[in-house]
Image: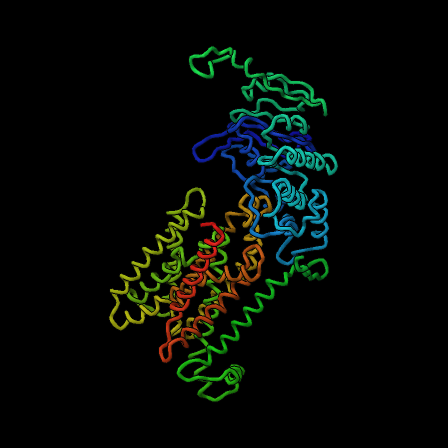
Length: 281
Length: 347
């Protein structure tokens, strides 16, 4: 049974790698036209969930539904025109230029005989313009900075022209300025182009600032989901991340801002950090 | 400023992207291959000038020339072109799939496996060229299964695959050596020659078999799997995201490449280094990222025909098997590669 207002959902998923079960009975729905962010501590299953939603990982039980149909049964090309993934593990072929890499994103729309239509050319140019890499078109991708390279990968995902875009930790390994740059771009894609975005982010404050729908996971379960303004509370952070904190309003955006408790207050609760010393000091 | 890519469009149905440099390299290599083929046809105990060769191929020419060209030289040179192309194409596919220039079917033991299969048919079972080709195919595929079983750990990863492949290659070389000792003396001599990689005795039967196999496998690879291979270049996740059925494409690519290697080995024995060096050479010439399948094929054909011509001319009155020349050239290439890596500070 599908929920109204969602195109992508996981129903009763059991996700596992070889012998390790990551999640059981996991049910998740991505609201249509939202910017959904999945957060949680390491090894909570958030990347695994994203990979399952993107059909990279076959669920041991349960199914992922795209537009009401089991994604595993849909033709690969059809899925590729609806759902795009920006994976962490993508490799740029040696010496490839920016324009060429972005052009690879048109693959699901091309065949052996239709290699480069007028539409392909236009979409690639627009994607590069939208991500601000148009003036880097002839540069080899290897020569770019981390932030620029990430924007090129996003341009490639854009060129695929999918209404749903999944991003697996798009800001890892980037410095703060580039992280904000990438997230601002994602927000722009969401607001101006009306795409549905699902991202896994490791920074909770970024997630609270940019997401319209937040999914917090721990140990393979969804602990809470909803708009960040509603669900991000000190209790939630304590439960999901085991981190005492207080939550204030971000002075710039008004979204929840998580401020971890100071070391002294935290120390008072538990064992001394250095054996034999007083835990409070 | 990169050279502009030319696009040919016909209505809304056809649009082809043509990169000038790879096109030039491909056509250039093909022309070079044909030129060397003509030279090679004229070489031998009974030399024929290039003009006469062309005349004979066109239908004219003396009856002696026609006999020598049609019955002896032409099938040999045609086999050289096809074997070179097949090995280079298989090499390009493998190297692209494992993303490692050393991941070539001749390094990983496939040519030795095919040779073992062929030797078993020649020495133990006995049979004509079709049976030998069948034996080589079975040998190649069995080697593939063996390497797959030994190297697979949730995927075929570069270094493990290479180590297992080199080990299997060594093991199979030993097997081939043993099979030689089981041969009758008169067979053993020609078998040793064949094991080095030789085009001697490549007649129309062999050439026809090879042509038939390539007529099927080359379109499968170029048309059926070419785009998929290019997507796989970016990693499996990226390829899956773009709608490539990764498992199916990889299997088709591997099986086709192994079959090409086996058929080539059935025709000319385990010729070394063409599968390894031709794709690398093609890539250096085209400077285009990606598998470079067609340029590799043309470069491989030119390389092998050139090597065969050299092998016949190098020592007067003593034609060498082509495998000797490709071995020396390939060894030289690897030494050059080593020196370049050393200079770049990578080792």
